Image (cartoon, rainbow, N blue to C red; front, side, top):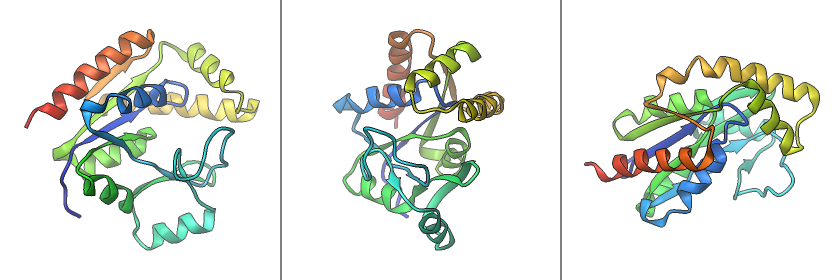
Length: 192
């Protein structure tokens, strides 16, 4: 696969604000970023659509694509809930001459960084504390009590991986986090 652009990886626990911050970066046209749409086996949430938020695949379809080596990286984030980055998605974005923004789980982010180490910056989005994560996840209205516990437990493990990222941004104040993120990404994309 020909490498023609740069990769910006945004990772962090569920509820850290990584998607909000990723959407902010995408809204800035001069950064020339396209969002990499991940494939997943999880259920489509209200307001999401296939091919826009995710490529929603059945478990069998996902496993077939993985077996056929169609992914750059995959991760079983929760039992039988897989996420992955399709090679065709990377080719699509680089084919139109843009850089790629990944909003992925921590392990997926580390895998992308490893695969494209020369052209990737990785940024971990952290939240001030467990209570803030809990509140953000509850405010989505899409989490059951049991899935909330699973996500919070996973967040504790993911936080231990934050030191493997190039940068860590504490998302305590959204406007401050946006500014820090923009400054880091702008400098990275504009350095040869």
